[in-house]
Image (cartoon, rainbow over all chains, first blue to last red; front, side, top):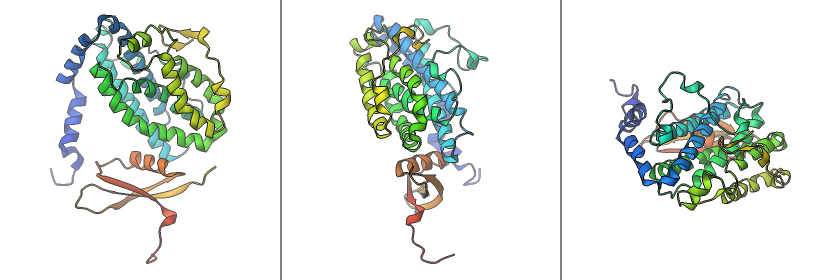
Length: 269
Length: 63
């Protein structure tokens, strides 16, 4: 190959990354075996958490991808594509872990035909494409950040596969926050109509205080925060930027619609 | 609403080479300019990338 031609493809690190992404490797098998480092009572909650994280990131990534050509600026169209790739990549890093759990052995594999059409369970506001760019920004701000806040509670987790992914994803999500807050400053009140539903979806996603998934994981030390603490963390993160946009008060006083919460699906009806 | 600015994007791939202009982005603030530059000009594993507002440049020799 002549020098300069496809030069990035000759980069050893890139080649190794591509090879690692293309096929399951020893690390994956080691990750699967790590299930046994979890106390038996925590395996089912961890399976439920990983399933929900993976599905939410997968569907959010697809929703972002729908704006790769429709964003109001070329720069944000490219950013939407990059964020879609990030979210889909995060989902792809979680799905294989499910195979290590009893409930995940018979799940369809990502490589199988029809996998993309399988049923998923993500938060309600992602059920349909965003109606406009302000909805994109609202999801970018509230839903994406809720997932990041949860992963922030896993960066010191003793369950290594989650800890490793949480740390890497936290770094990548920094750009998503910059994008969301930059657009919030710019659009201001235009984002307001999209916020209440996304707020409800994101804040209920952590479950009630006695949530059968997150409560045992936090009590068992796998996550550093329980549902109420996660809500406090998310609220603290959003409050400052929403306040600056004069959008905080109606949201902060909002009652969460727990009567519509479906715990098994981890979403509102 | 803030005013949109054009930012010049400079980058380099190796320590022994100087920064050179790889393009521009349009953004209202430095944070967004950095984010857009990083996502648009990601064709190489750069070792350094900087953005600077185009309206802050000074012409020495006009084209």
